[in-house]
Image (cartoon, rainbow, N blue to C red; front, side, top):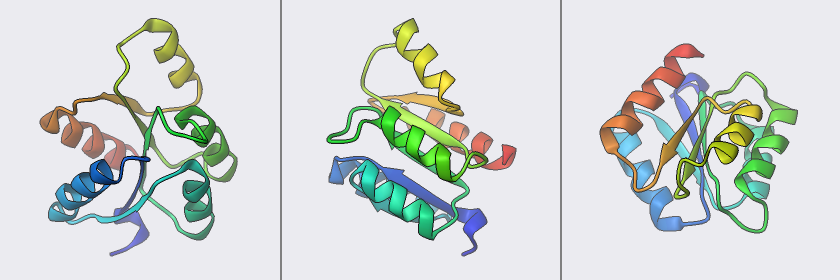
Length: 124
């Protein structure tokens, strides 16, 4: 696989990471998972990805803080944010201000997830 086909998933929930990894690998992507924002920053320093998927609620580094740190390293890589929070307008404005490509709401709609990922990868 080339870096153009590699996706990084960042979520402190190991089960979600593994489930998404399994699904996306069946679609032919090379998927790496990490369980913290700090690990994500290190992974992006070492590798190139066609897409990064970040969970909003993580500890100790939140999804927004993680995205801010990732944007210092790569601005061109699309980032999709996953959240279990509602669709509150102030949260969406904050997320969009950080250069997020799109938002996926948990529980994930698998069809919507695939469409969003395809759009992000094709746009790049």
